[in-house]
Image (cartoon, rainbow, N blue to C red; front, side, top):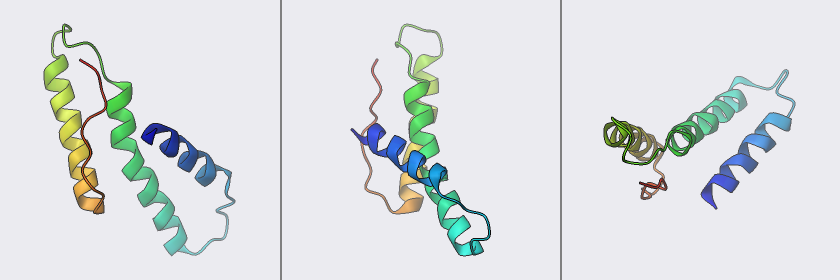
Length: 83
C-alpha cells in the first residue's frame, strides 16, 4: 500500500510542468523524490536471506530508509521486505 502511494506521488510529480517554477517548488519536488528513493531501493533490492550477503545488504538499506525517515520527520515504519 505504501509503495502504491509512492508510485502515485512519482507519477504526479513527473506529470507536472516544472519549467519556470520558483526554486522553492523545485526544492520541494526534489525533497519528496529523495524521500521516496531509499524505500524503493530497499523494496527493489530485497532477496531471500539464503543469498550470500543478503542480510548485510538488507541491514544497510534498512539503515538508509530509517535515516531518510528520521531526517524527514516521517514516522518510522518497519521494513517491508521478505526474507
